[in-house]
Image (tube, rainbow, N blue to C red):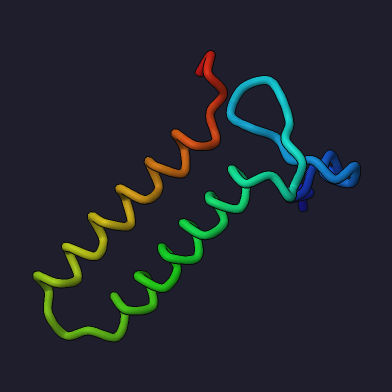
Length: 78
């Protein structure tokens, strides 16, 4: 079984999409985490609802949030 961790965050920083690292307490990392939690809540809502239309709308919002997280994670070069 291959490992699913990198051990590079042990110094209190986290990687970005591109070169560079940020402290784990950085406001950008906090924003990404908050958006991820919102997406998780939407996923929970999706499995609870009966409406296909609303489910598709929530899925699209989740995809949009995923793109926002990618933009926030990327360095200026990327």
